[in-house]
Length: 242
Length: 183
Image 1 (tube, rainbow over the protein chains, first blue to last red):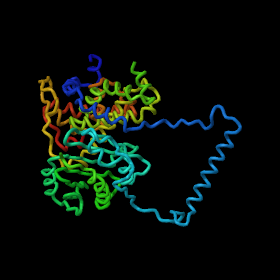
Image 2 (cartoon, rainbow over the protein chains, first blue to last red; image 1 turned 180 degrees about the vertical axis):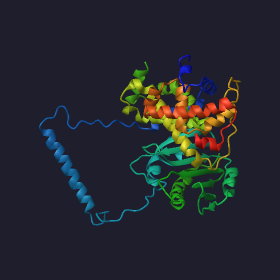
Image 3 (cartoon, chains in turn blue, purple; image 1 turned 120 degrees about the horizontal axis):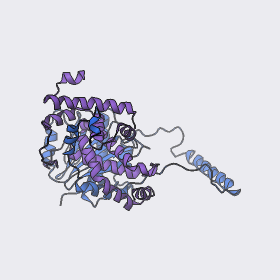
Image 4 (tube, rainbow over the protein chains, first blue to last red; image 1 turned 45 degrees about the vertical axis):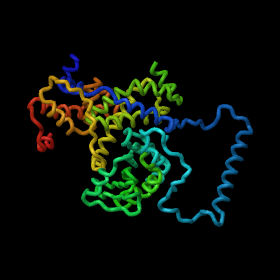
């Protein structure tokens, strides 16, 4: 450190103060990471060569045939009279049914991942309106209180789901008593929306779920609509406290 | 040894990545804690960085740069946590009663509370530079490379932050808002 003390912007008092901070990660930090790894695919670098090193003369013919089949097949699908053909209006807000075949983003067996089991990555991506950007879930917390944060490909938070498995009543009362909150009808055993923070909270039994979307939905009203759609999926997956 | 683990992890070896994560978890958490000053957010940032590392590891061109690359992910995760702070603090959640794991050791710094308060007033970007320089001992060139910023930017951030902290250390008082604005 003797050299460092000679630098004008090095102060040993600051280094000493920082030294006193903790240097050991809580045990569950690593456990949560290792538990989530199997559910997170690696992004491969896109280094596909434009042609293979060894190509025989039939390969271009085969490739052309595959492309032709795809083009013809696509055209036939698009031109079907009762299909979603050219000129049809796309639906504004895709919905995903609770019985969607998409698998949960993370295994449901571990309590640490409980919040991530309420909404799948595909659903988060679809409902948050960020199609194509992905929604990578990250679990945190342990036991009764867990959190799942979904981020898009740029690392921006698009959705946050917090799950209090039991004893959520007090928290829900606190939410209800916050100034400006609005009751949300027909959702779980009770639900409120706080326009100030764009947070939707709902109870099911003794469990509380809070949902906050990122900035993809601009106004509180549109965020409420998005969060409600997500909540309607999640409410079906909240299991009663044993 | 580590380079071999990185190469295996790049190839999708979860066990190899688990070994890397185990050996870096404390250092990453320590870095995140010092920037965020909050054990729970530090844990979130560490997990986010490590999962991001696993996801994007195949894009790491030089396995020898794994440490710096991981530190960059941790710092970016801290930025995200800090940016989200205002957005999420009003959410429905009672404060947990888990005590912080800060060791209760008396230090030579005369007024730790004042220093803590002054440090919290710094931007996350300034905090990161201070921690990388004063705790990890990175020179400015390495800080700039790790954070992906020009060296001049790293220097100015460090200079401003240290000046703010020294004001507290030398005067034994907090900065007033007007002093902050004029600094």
